[in-house]
Amino acid sequence: MALDDVDNCCALLFESWCERRCVVPLAYLMRVWPMTDPGSHQAQRLLGALRDLLRFNAEMLDVSDRRLIRHALAAAGEAAQL
Image 1 (cartoon, rainbow, N blue to C red):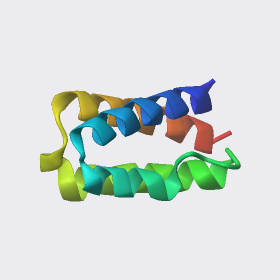
Image 2 (tube, rainbow, N blue to C red):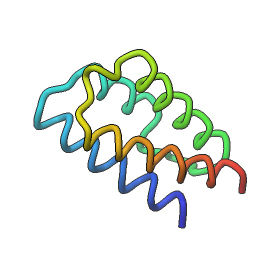
Image 3 (cartoon, rainbow, N blue to C red):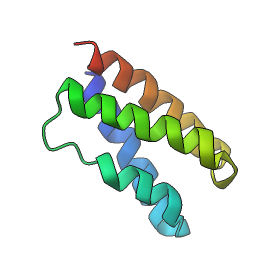
């Protein structure tokens, strides 16, 4: 299921950013995750936050972060269309 993929990616990102104390990416993520009501509206909000993070703060992200974000974006986009 797409939302499970999104949730797994976000959990991995959360753990990694907490360990590395990456507060800016954490702030983007924590505004929209965890999704309390995993409907299309919250999936759209998550999509927007992750896109903004990539657009405005890509230099704070490592290769693994970007890969997980792209995977989460694809899964969230799929979930938003349901």
